[in-house]
Length: 353
Image 1 (cartoon, one colour):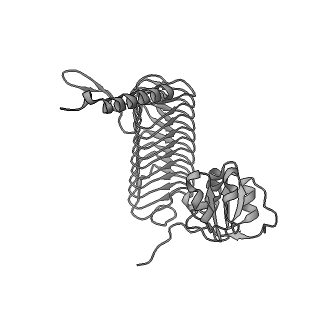
Image 2: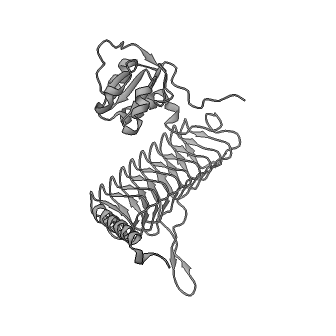
């Protein structure tokens, strides 16, 4: 059986001068600016025609042993580069590497057609009243409802369902099996397979029998948002659910009705955000964070993974724990508990009979 390579590098590769310019670094004395590199690889697997990077002390030994032709490296590790590896010193080597990787593998930046088609594939179902600009790709099995509008350069994956009146901007990617209803998407939005946007929010008037509350809002997703596989974003009940520009959401996240998420937030896998909560710009939620409803998490706040947030969080703060609190208070509690446990283990009277 052959060993397929799913992401081949751009045919021409990059010259050392192009790599240095993109990384904002100078060239070492005597280095050939026209030397060409055909791909990127990890420190351990890179060869003489590969670009690598290093910015973490855990990989010091891997850096010292690398065979990479060129390595983006932070200043404190530059001296550990082997003599045969060209060290390009950067204050943020990972970010520089990411930008260069996008140039080497542009097809990995967003999912494309799973059927290698252009235009509407045979087996797709596009309603006559839907409006698709030139350059839209629709894979087999996809369903696009009446009144839907889709911008040029967008790819609709197989078996995706685009509901009536949904609007999708340009250069978006809607993954296989994704469903969209009551939603408006901006440009360059990526939805990975199985994402669900615009379904009912969980709203009931509790009583002897639970009366369903109609959910009449929408989901608004602004430009450059990325939403992971099997993530759900409920439409609003009385107002729109909004995902702000540039926000990145991981797989398996639940975002409830009326939630407002600001610009350039990062939400990691397993997070659950209850209804009517607001995240201001640049908020980071670690994996498996739970947020109760009707709260506000301030601009730039960061919440540690597995925490439970049950009250408002001030801007710029770092919280953790259950219930979540400022990290210093949380660490003090953890330290105190550890000392008590250690003391108890040394106390003979504390032994079980």
